[in-house]
Length: 415
Ligand SMILES: *Cc1c(COP(=O)(O)O)cnc(C)c1O
Image (tube, rainbow, N blue to C red; front, side, top):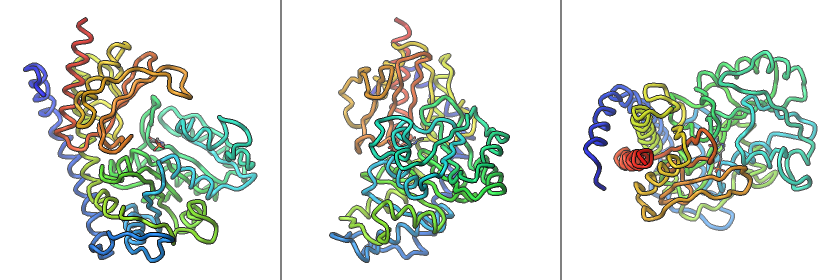
């Protein structure tokens, strides 16, 4: 791909301005890698673990070892890592159904949960479909504007039926800041002093962005997707849960069935990619963070509102660019698509996505379908026409994607 002189010189300026940030991002990746490699060594990772099993999958040394490694790296007592968990939503649902019982209250303290959880909880969808609401789980929510509403949380926790405090770490596709692990730690202290409720974190997009994870600061359970950060761009599918031994055991009864738990589950030769992916994960996450910071600088220079800004701390890999017009948003996504390694020839178009009120445009050219640790962007066609983008397996390829998006948007806004 060829780029204009003006684009190249803006990139140069950006990389100059981002030098210190990049050093910090690399330092987090280094410490993450240290943790991962120490866990690999401690658990004596060896070639035989990559072989995989069939049928029940008893004595799958690779599977059992990877569970222990995730637990160690995330400072948790236990973990479940499976290629067969279809996505982040299922990993989260396994945790929700694993911990909640009829009559329990699930209290979200970060406002509305991620879209796909609404049907799981039963605030959307058809009654009788097997949502948590069908089983008598009561859902309550406390609004979140960037910081926790502690007085409201204190009040809500007086209800002893509150069995779970639910936290979404990443902004996801909402216009709100992402939580740092430190902020989650403060919430944990506050809640644990007042209640026995489990604290469950939606950790999607958060892994390896910060010095440690929510489970390092006392969260009972967290869950995430392996086609985001924790799979390092290598996992072909999957999800994980990590937390206390008790919470993970209860979750394992929903993963398979009560009494069986996590001691079964054939791995068919997926172990190698999951091990390799976790080995890459701190580094790959750093590539995505750098790509996001570069875009923040370039689009801010071009006059667009961005969130977070280039020099702000990043606690997930998502970058918002407020494109201002539908034309600019579509141009942004076209540019990302053109600058992708796979399907670069395709042109994304806005479409009526089921469950959304506005048309949505999406760009993705990934080796793994839907993998958002790979460079990808989307946005609903409504003001302020925000592009949410994330990923980039390598900073070099991410940079190419961003330069492509930048030139496409510049062309569109000249017209
Ligand atoms: C990606 C994501 C999920 C899960 O989405 P899947 O597409 O099912 O993996 C849940 N919560 C947040 C905040 C996410 O970013």
